[in-house]
Image (cartoon, rainbow, N blue to C red; front, top):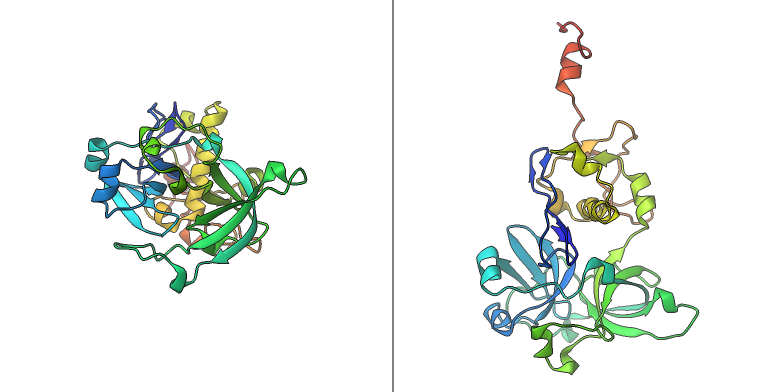
Length: 287
């Protein structure tokens, strides 16, 4: 699920097929930042209310970027204690990473409950991309994606310090508990470059969905393709096909520039039975 405050693209896969587009309120989506209700946070083992939603399946998967504490919220629990995204994807800002310090085990906070073994805690100093060459303002934050970051990288984050948030759960938190910036994800490359390198495609239930003129919907769809490339767990139940108009390359999950890619072994042949079995439309059956 992907979306902003007014529209979401719901893509439900069953084999080759994908659903259509529907409208939703500003619910909790992948790569969004949320503030949990106090009672819900307590029921999840007193997790920090400010969390990043890093995956949405049958449950909402949350991680505290300050401790790596993780929690899952089922649909039943979510609708009983609903929470919304603090910002839309359009409100995320590009930052440049100025310094990365991995947090050593001896310096990690003591956490009760499950912590992620796939993420790495790091202290990071970032600057707005728009401020580079204008001022030397830097912001400190702690992040869960330290394993992905190096000095000079670009990340997407939310400016909590200067945001005008109208959220009842945020208002109940002490100001010193709020981070200046929450980093959501790393930017591996610009979208045009990634699109050019993409050697695969998806099949769709309705071709009209793939040809929608809405820029916002197509941007959300492109974000989804990038998420498939970046997270094997998301694509494990999705049929990915070789694009016959492009030449697939056999390589690891990342190329020399660190851009995540899907390997040739994970791609299925784009087989058209009607054509292949008869030798072409209207042709006699092959022996």
